[in-house]
Amino acid sequence: MKDTPYWNPRHETMPRQELEALQVRKLRNLVEWAGAQVPYHAKRLSDAGVSADSIGSLDDLRRIPFFTRDQWMEGQLEQPPFGPILAAPQEAAIRYHMTSGTTGRTPIRVLDSMKDWEWIAEMWCYGLWGFGVRPTDRVFIAFGYATFIGFWGLHYAGEKMGCLTLPGGAMTTEQRVRTIEEMGATVVASTPTYALRMAQEARALGIDLASGPVERLILSGEPAGSIPATKKLIEEQWGAKAGDTAGMTELGTIMIFECEAQPGGTHIIEDHYIEEVIDPETGEPVGYGEQGERVVTSFGRGFIPVLRYRTRDLVVKVPGEDCPCGRTFDIYDGGIRGRVDDMKLVRGTNVYPRAVESIVREIPEIDEFQIRLYTEEGIRDEIEVLVEIPDEGADVEGILSGLGKELADAHESLRFGVRQAETGSLPRFELKAKRLVDEREVIGGEGEKRG
Amino acid sequence: MDEIGEAQRELAEVYERLKALLAERRDELAPYEERNALKALAALWQVANGLDLDPGQLYDVGV
Image 1 (spheres, rainbow over the protein chains, first blue to last red):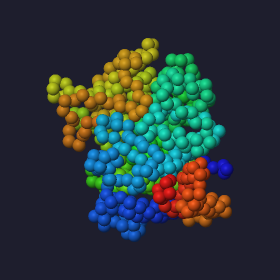
Image 2: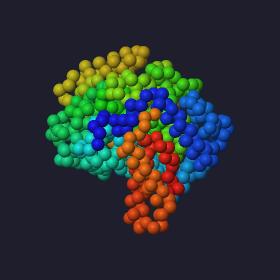
Image 3: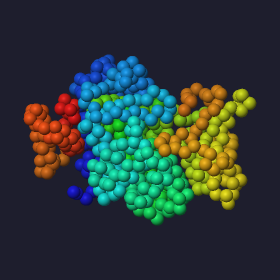
Image 4: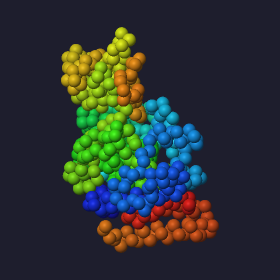
């Protein structure tokens, strides 16, 4: 086997012009496939005047109409359980998965064939290999192994790469920490929140993770994997490098990963996806360096063709050459920065949970936190941050007042209440953390949604 | 685009031969032969795809 930092050297270092030509060819194939196999897509494409033959450049992508989660869910409700978007007979499927449903909405249900499932693992291989994982590694996966797709693909990628793959399903946090130690895991996969939770548990058990064999953490499932303060905290507590990834059930796998150079962002796997960034209000493309909404077109899962799917994820794309790793794949600077719907309007000021987390995580004494929005006197929006500070010797008053000032300074002097919560009283999360609780009687303003 | 090497060309040939075998002579295969061949085809599809050979879809052969 070649000694290379790339899973697919040919594609990952391909000159941009060739890469874009490859994307155009794959887009043409995808439009042809979706048009021939899925009447629902055939109509949408036909109504827009799009055929495979009419795709001559990446600009032609913009002639294809957006596809939204609402449309996906409506389709499922009209034609349960999968909707009108399957391109192959259900008998060809070997896997069934669905979204985690943390938002309480109708989950999205998906099917994969044998080839698609291999492809799902293949995408994770880009991420694992790119972050330095090799066949000699022992990969522990702190994940529930149920219908939520989560780290399933990473598990199979670990096997495909020849790693000793350690499934961490149906275990308590203590059992997971002990297994990591006993089995000498060198790589651990989890959400950022759960990485912190395991570190906390290890401390309680008297296990020093930082002096153990874990060299790499593969993070996914929350934007926190690319929040510098959170990542620094995780890396310090584990004594290991932390690499961010992000994926979605709608694609079946990851579409971005952080390379070993850790450029402060995540490379887009551009030989398998086209990722556009648009203004969420106008739908028009935004340029490098500007924040916008991700729109994804996937060439991978043929069972469910994905064409211009609006993800609601907020990102900032920068050129791949900003990273010294040699990949030509563009980068999402700061990973997934949040969701279009995450923004809360509090007395006229925009508040993003990610921004609050990035400030809270700068304070090492804070173990866990929660953002609470509520209505005071029946009319006024208030925001407070509850924090756990387990160290009894800590200067609690100083921490609370300092945090309140930092938060206000970062939010146009918006007044944040900051209170200490009893240690262990705030919720812990294994999957996607939900640290914002909105108890307001009237939601802030136009354009804002209850999360 | 880059020309592919000899080793890569051989891999692509193996993929095509396996695909043809499963399309044409499947009835001759025992369950263990057929199912393992299908699994191998799913893996080799990733190679053909990575080599930009436009391998299409495999749902008609159950992959």
